[in-house]
Length: 258
Image (cartoon, rainbow, N blue to C red; front, side):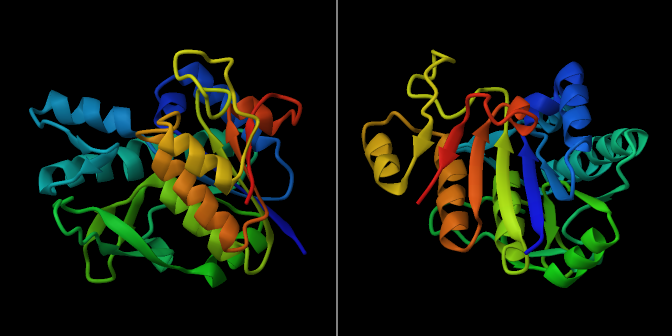
């Protein structure tokens, strides 16, 4: 079975030009099929504030009204996505940037929450695996931003961790898939104030315990929920840590297992 590496990078890598450059250099050297997913929350927040919009976050997830949607589409699908694609072309990776609307690659439904109106936020409903296969077979590197669509003409802001997870799940029907969540820390920490307190391996039982003890909280919860959902649906391996782990497996990171 052919292999695919799906990698998601967080906003803190994107916001740091030197860090992003180093990541893209490492990413460009990964052999074989690969897919990149990027967030970009801080850039969108900065742009929103510069035009007088007040960002609204609930439990680490962005509430997206119509003006904020315009900003995130402009920043995620425009500035960040095309900058990354141009850099990868420079590094001899034939990358193409996508939102979920392009080629109907990721279709979502507007989130329907019983008590919170998240606005134009999407939950992934379907991935166009056939088109993804075609792209990968032509040695194209798909680069996804965190924008999807509902097939009724509406773009939706969608959690980038979830997009990476759903792409990995869809691809695991055809490939052996490794999913990597790369951010500025070395892995999942037992003490958020201590960068050296990396938990080397987390299984579902330990995860439940760490959540109950509030060791794992806020934005790390949806990330890990996505991890366990992905593993239960066929993804082979998931790692969380600094992007240096991509070029050296001995670098400290957190391995997620069932």
